[in-house]
Each structure stands twice: as C-alpha cells, then as structure tokens.
Image: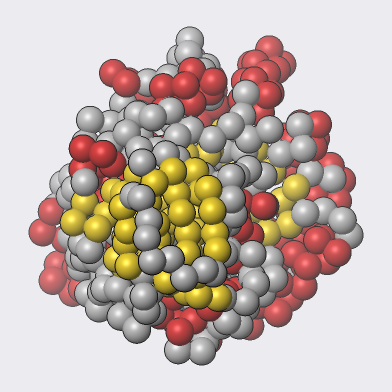
Length: 531
C-alpha cells in the first residue's frame, strides 16, 4: 500500500532550498519524490498543502534507552513523537542501559544517581540489546555504550583504583559494544564514577574509539566558569579547562568528538562562549570530526548531587556530617556562588522520594519555609533521599547565547529529556524541537532549512546513521509534517506543542493531528547498528 504526501513544502534535511512537491512512501521506505501535479493516485492521499514535509527529527542527546523496552514504553515516547522526533541517540553522559558486565558485583549501582536498571528486562550484552529492540520499541534507537555503566558494574561508584584485570575487562566490554553497533563511548565526568577518572583512562577510551572510527562523547568535568570539580577556584575558567582536556584527548587519540550539551551555567560563565566555540572549531579544523549538541531552553535536568564536589561525594556518610567538613563545604559553596553568578534559587526540585512537598520549589524557597540556610536545606534534602533525586538547573545560558550556538556549524539539536511519571516535567521533553522551529520561523537562526538540517541530516551524518535524516528515495520513511504558521511550543512546557500534524516512523503513521496510534507506535521503531 502506497501513501502520497501531496503538495507540501519539502525541506529535505540537506540544507537545500525548500520546494513544493510530493513524497510517496511504500512500506517502510520513500519510493518517489517529485514536483508533478498528481490528479489520480492508487493509494492513500494526505493533503499537505500549506504544510512542511521534513525528515523525522533526530534527538542528538537522549536518555530514552532506559525505557525503550519497558512495558509502558509508549508513554515515554509520546512526548517526543508529538514534537516530530522519530530517532534518538541514547547512552549519553556515561549512562547506558546495556554493555555492562553481566557478572559484575555492582550491577545494582548502574545508572548512578539518576537512572535505575530494570533487571527483569535487562540485556547486558550490547548486541543482544539491539536485537531485542528491533521492531519492539517506539522510536528508532542508536546508542553509545556508557563508560559509567560499564565501570560501575565492575568497580562500583567509589574512588577506587581498578585492578589490571578489571581494567582490561572494562576495555573489552567497550570493544565488544563498538564492534557490535555502538555509536561510540560516552563519559560522564561530573557524575560518579566518571568524576573520579583520570586523563590516562580517557586517552585509552579515545584510542579504542579511533580504532573503530567511533565517537567519544563528553559530559564535561565542568559546564561553568567555576566548578567544585576543580581544586583551584581562580584562574582559567573551569569549563574552558574541561574543554582543553577534550581538545587534548581528541588531538592525541584522533578519535571523533561529541561535546554533550554545550552550556554555560551561571551568568559569570557567559563570557566564555567565544573561547569555548574556538576550542571546538580548532579541534574540527585540525581534522578531528567534532560536534556539540544543545537544547532550546535555558535550563536542564540533572541529578541532585551534580553541584557537590568530588571530594565530598567520595566521603562516607558519617564523615560528610562532621563539623569541619560542613565548614569547608560552606566556604567553597559561598565562594563558588559569587564567582559563578548562580545560586540556590536556580536549583528546582523535580523529584525526590522523601519530601514530595518540595517538588517544583527551588532550594531558596524551601530554605525560607524552613527558616534555615540554603546549603543546610540542600544537604538535608540530599541526605533524606540517600543523595538520589532529580533537579532542574537554570541559567544554563540565555536566549542570545541559544541563538548564537544554534547558528554554529558544529551544532546539533536535542532534548536531553525524558518523560517523568512523578514530579515535574522538563519542558524540553514535549517542546524542545517545536521551540527550535518557532525560533527559526521568527528569524532567530540562519534559516528554516538550516534548522531542520541540524535536527536531521547533520545529526545522522555526525553519528554515521545511514538511510535516515533526509527525504531521499530509498531512505526509511521517517517523516514529520507540520504547519509553519502554527508551530510553537506549549507555554507551560508540560504538554504538546501546536502545529505538528503527522509523524511517520518507518512508514507507519503513528501520529495524526494530536491523535497517537499507540498500538502501532509500541513497535514502530528499529534498532540502529552503527558501522
């Protein structure tokens, strides 16, 4: 059965000029694209007059591998599909739901402080996980193997040197994943256990990625001018030091580089934009394929421990509560806030198990209610929840910086968001790509064609995803159709955007004018093996 998408404005994803025409799909493929007038057609016709026909959008940085095989996986996919996303790049920030040691002593710790492994539906072997996903998941899924997940399964989350045997086992697991279709290896250098890892280990990972021509993705050691991840608070801004480290690894190992969520947390960090981009462009200009991903909102989700220094996180609970430890932390926190232009009113509780009355409030508000210091309040909430929970951090950057980054040649677009059944939603999970489109329509970015390129083919090309990301004959029929006049994000951020009309995943129409075909969507996605 063929389907004709008739008389739409075709933006093919390759940053080429849009044109009015028709797209014909059959089964899971695009079989024809033309500009002919079609009066008769033996098949289903969708009139796309006054609508944009674009490639299905690719979320360049997602964590939806953690629910891709869950029984309620459709619930997690629906917000993404509703904004036109058909493919997700997962396993980011050092966290993947596969690739780890099946006999590891610390499997319970995989996911660190943010994610929980579904042990009843677990696939430690990367190839077996991809096999299980194929035609049994809503979205198309490609994935990194997460350094943090693999290391944690073998060595836990603590600052403990690995034995030579365990280190080799970890490297062998990375190699197995890379040989069996992983996008690359991701590291999370602000999260346990990545926060404790030295540069030599990262160099070894980079060399392995180079061997397989795969990408090494970095959640940097710092995303701000000042970070408690570094001992010296003054001098070169910490986020630039973190990028210097990535530059060194790229130049030494020659592996492809992905800078995850390029952000500038705190007002004092915003002056670093030019130099940060210069470092990444210098790496790319030196022949090291380099990219960065970004979201359209000036906030993002993280674990509740993300602002705590690594020396504090490495301490056992009883030592964290000692008087001089608290004094040291208090002094460092005060200095950091001043140097950063960031405070506890920029930390919003998204979800905690204990203290649900705090959800949606920021730390400063809670401290005022409790009539105590902000730091004490923050640490109390952390301790009450065994240092587990979700927060949203604000002042990641501002609208002017979003415009600047979105115009850059190395940029790709993403959500870094996942649907939450408890707590408050990150607005990006429903609206990030719709907001990008609305901003492009209003003239903030280079052009609509360039914007769609950065959410489709640019991303597919960077991650070496074949036969997706463009509207071309022979490609998979991942297609998003929207009204340019109507497209805009939901102002509250917790519901669907307006303007998205139809979404096809592998030729299946899973979304039709705000109506989801949930039964079809449950198994419409394919696993993507990157060669």
